[in-house]
Image (cartoon, rainbow, N blue to C red; front, side):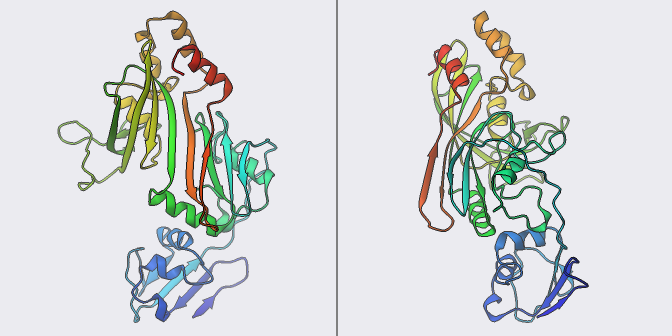
Length: 340
């Protein structure tokens, strides 16, 4: 193995012939065996950013490593983080040296983005703990899954690289347990069901997502016939109550795509109450009771809550489960409407 670099603060290039234990493995798994890389998530990051070459050519993660291969890996120079601490008291449900489980309030963005550079969950985490991994100058330290700004509920954050890799794999392999609740405007046709589609950016409004349509202008629903764009999304639902033109829904996620629940419910004709991006404001007039109409028009957020989260602890392998009810103000409103 050969290392080339100009200084400790510059990029490093590693050139190597595969170790015996690397031969036959996928490239991402093989690179994870190197102490400089250490885990598969970092190996994937390097490959996805075209920083790995095999025999002089940019390589894919699925490349089967051969004994005769020459592998070149460029480790980018550390980038000092510009993240600032945000003094916000977090509702911590569990914390140890590997993970932290938080009940996120509605209105809090998970990681820095346009308009929210310093007042996010990531900034609050930096104020709360020094244990988050900041390698590769990440702007999303420890974040393995997201909740939308207006969604309340449970989120798990990794406090080291090993935990990050384990949790990322669990979400990718769909072994986590995730239950959401929502109040929707409209009456669901069936009491139980599953919504399947490929989700991609909306072709006109880039703030939204939408199901990819086939030639018949219906959502593509065959997981074995993937379109050129879009990611496979599956939402299982159950209607817990229907009253006054509203539906109280329970969703179990099989996948976790951006805006997945919001898109699937909106395209089913029952947008989440308060979700103006996906047409909830246009449905308010369908509600007969004026008092409920007024409640819906003055909602401070859309009514989606991540109520349950289960995963396997990265170090102890213990199966962990967390549950958190709606915030009190929203719970009172749902009870007022007769849905709880």
